[in-house]
Image (cartoon, rainbow, N blue to C red):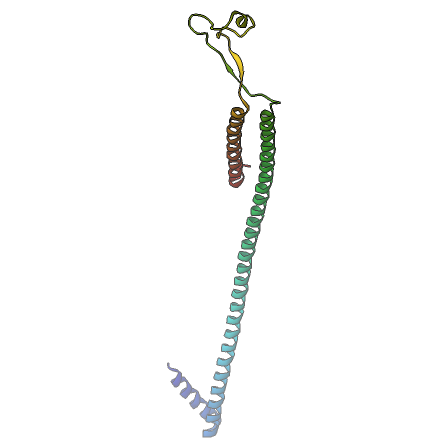
Length: 194
């Protein structure tokens, strides 16, 4: 049965009940239309309120999720920043220690070179003087004084200029070793090996 048929049947029933008056049928139909419209509006209003509540719940859930993501990102950024500060402090302490070590080594090398140049310290190497074939080639008195026959090792002093050059070479080697050690320590700090 269609809605139009139901309305017509209701109109006939109302006309019979009203005693055949046409006015009361229209009044009844008007009341029925107003009631249907009021009921439709009421249903729409209830449904709209329910949708608004659902939308508000979804917005609140989304806001909570976004806050949780933001809090996690903030915590990660703070941890990364603290790690960077810690690494910078470790590298700065390492740099200060290596700089002091390098300064001390340079001062010690300069003091040693100055002492060798002044003649207060001597640099010597082990050496020996082989005897020439057919004799020592030295006067008899010299051999008796203990110069040696060339078989035993003797200490030979280097002149100050040669000693200074050897000390400079040794100092450069020591500096390279300190630089390599500093580089290794820096890499250990950066990769977390401390």
